[in-house]
Image (cartoon, rainbow, N blue to C red; front, side, top):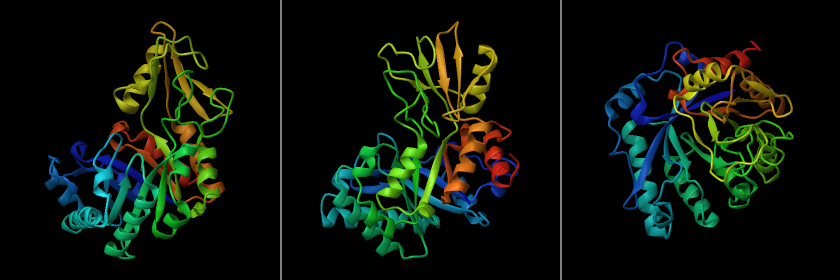
Length: 320
């Protein structure tokens, strides 16, 4: 079973003790698109990443390009010449650093035919021995915006971003596994089934987990109307989540959704997140549905004890 971590390049100071054995794959994030070419010139610790890659052991490590809000993709794939330049620049960086592959994180492709052509071009340049993967949105509209039957023949696997799935008008879960009264329309199981029905084999699908929380402010609790303001990210990753729980008094767990949440009545703030229990449920789902594995955003958001990554590893080994 694949366990894939996204790691923000500039945050990387090495893996915590034991985590190299808990992971199978890493995607370093992000290369950007600059003047029609992929670039990692903004990375401040390239030497650390190069040194890590020399001693990666059995880990498969890919270069991820794009990310939320990243621009430059549309002109880079506009025509055959621009696609050639862009694709070759990605392959050049991959070969220079000796990455094991490329992960496309274009959120979200606005021309599905040209996206497929780009992927085909990359596969031709990379060969069959290198990994070619993508991060894919969890919404039905994302499925419709991709030529998935064609892409599934070219991609090694798809990481489905089954997080940030909350409503902005109603306080709801952002990374629930199943439908519930709180999150009846957006949940991970639905996203996985949509991709499978659109032509992606289950053995090429990774389920996404969140190592961070979304926070709704100025609200009256779960499943209540918001004040019109979107949810934001809670700072501090899982350590920040634990601190929020301690101050609020306790956390609640939606058995239907298999998702935890915490409401602080004094602050009128609610957070939605993954914890070891919900992660165990996700690993069980991956095993039962015979998916490729699980991926998460992002490594440095875990606490110093790697609590969430250990939960994945323990669940895979039967610890839950």
